Length: 188
Ligand SMILES: C[S@@+](CC[C@H](N)C(=O)[O-])C[C@H]1O[C@@H](n2cnc3c(N)ncnc32)[C@H](O)[C@@H]1O
Image (cartoon, rainbow, N blue to C red):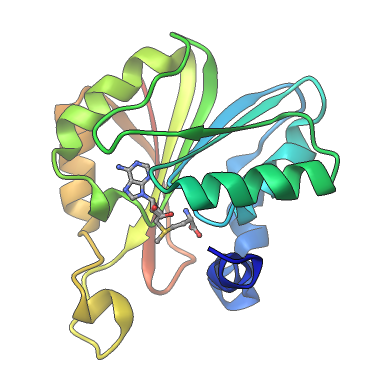
């Protein structure tokens, strides 16, 4: 993957139409927190999170694509962000320290997961007791667009049910994104 291709990949999340500033505000991140961005892609959100959590915080940028991992590593070096830890993950699981995370962030990735409920169960071990999981994904659509044509979507009700089955409670349901749902969960 060239830098140019990865930059293109970052165009969508950074587009003001997709409300990245509002998403970040809703997360209410604080300095010193640890967050994982699962399916980090070109790293648009990981890089922004790194600035917010600061030197005492940590951002794990996790993806199954080595080229994205290399790109994020390069970007972090260029921007002198020493708190980003790019990690190549397997499709069905990731290895992080137990009870180490304040926030797990997943944007436009849950539709890729084959056994979501089990994946969500596995994530629980990485969260601190008061940790949160944020899930943003495309709403089902029959429109003639990328997510509609390629099945890159999952219904909000499906995600809520699967997260409840995995042992989480829905805490917030944000409705300011037009094409995506955005929900936040905690461990009861
Ligand atoms: C549509 S992109 C979203 C990128 C980024 N989250 C964003 O919002 O711009 C989905 C990303 O998830 C990655 N991915 C797919 N399956 C994955 C898995 N099981 N674990 C981690 N990353 C995965 C892909 O390589 C890709 O970079």
